[in-house]
Length: 328
Image (cartoon, rainbow, N blue to C red; front, side, top):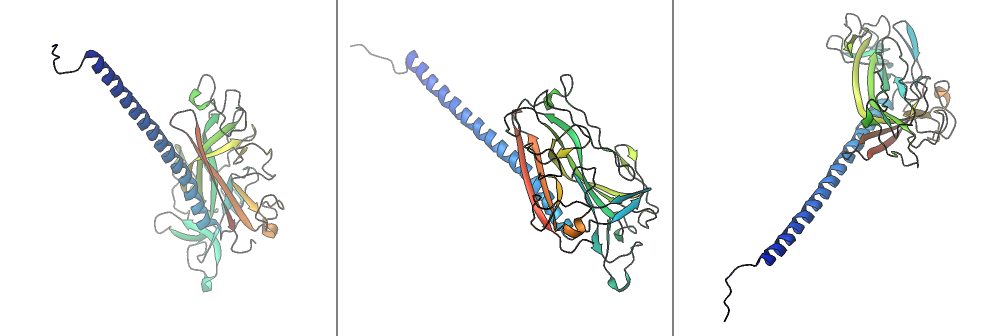
């Protein structure tokens, strides 16, 4: 009789090892996929929440705003509402209050329009005739391909507003990672360019304002600003707009590129609407917002490259803010 020692043969060990390696590889692959999906889900949710937070701020601050007056500051008279040269990427407004231009209570509690100064006491509080401007400021250019057009930063507004950030276009010799090599909006080509940046809130005072008296200008990007600029705050970053043309600041929320003009039915960042609530209705701009304007349509897109570098996460949010009172 042939007796066999207890144990495994070399063949059995090899087979067991192969099975073990296969199980480990499958587990690692499953873990990798799960981790990737969780990462993408988290990144997508984070991008979505940026839009939700910004629109919540707009809902709280813009429904009762006044968009139809002007403010004279630093030698220039500016209309509130949507600046004609902004391609609908900015809006200026005031809100109701009961303090006069010196910050004192108005007689009989009369309602006037202005804004809150964020300066330390005694300059804090509501002042009549202060104004708030929101504007999109691009800081990064993304091209679908090297043949996509360049973007041009918006033209400077002049004092008391700081200059826009410098904007550098990627090319074959610089910022190559911003040439994506993907069709971001899924329109079948790689010929679009996008800008990403921030929506910044500025509170400005009119010339001679009590709020600005004695207030020292603060630096923005290393440049000390006029004392008439009372505060600067970034409300939302990661905002994504499509470059509509090579004209300075011609950026739209219409990421699909179906429209050629911000005056047509496009998804603009800020847009006054008529009683239909749609930009497809009567064109409403600063010249007739007091007559035809019934609300402000805010549409914002946020976007980030995904963790693989082969995709782009984009989320778009929109809200229609009906005016609570007649624009005058």
